[in-house]
Length: 233
Image (cartoon, rainbow, N blue to C red; front, side, top):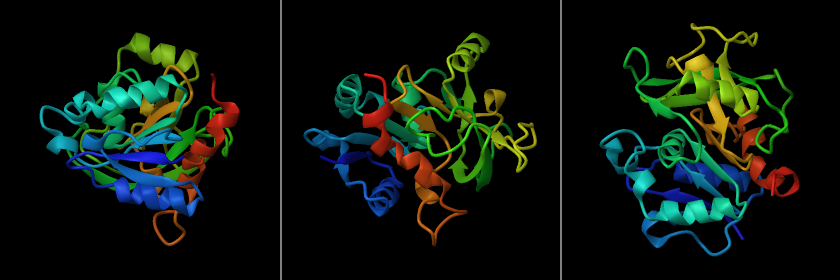
């Protein structure tokens, strides 16, 4: 029983995710995409990187990899899924969450620490925080701008499916604090059920005490421990 971190050709954050999860006491291993998922995984991570070189567009080819069928079956059984950065792009392309991630405004790769405001603290991925709390995580992406129709964004907000928004240190959501131009400052969202989540910032890079801006990422990754207690059936 383990969390499977799916490695595609071009993934480069898979080992970081495994290391961070193990540091938190969560059993995790890398699953090469061509080999499928291990038997009875307790969770799945779609990690950061540049899967398939981001040809066509970020995440598009990985979202059509046969392993995604196995991931979809796992999700349908209630297995938690977390997509991070390129994994968020894959998750959106595969339809696990609504919307899409596209080129940053300004067309620049952004690699920095950002502040995030917790929008919904009643999910497995955010239960360690309080609504309105400001946390800090790293980003590293060139195609991280969340886009969706206004109707879709309205629905995400109405259904409390926005997890995080980019903000300043005081928690104010402003254009200046938005590193990529994401619609309404959205940095992370839930799928149809709360055991599925994607976000562009990297929680695995803010988990080990000696690495990153702090340990706020641990609060997100502990969602794998919480899903069994709080996720919808």
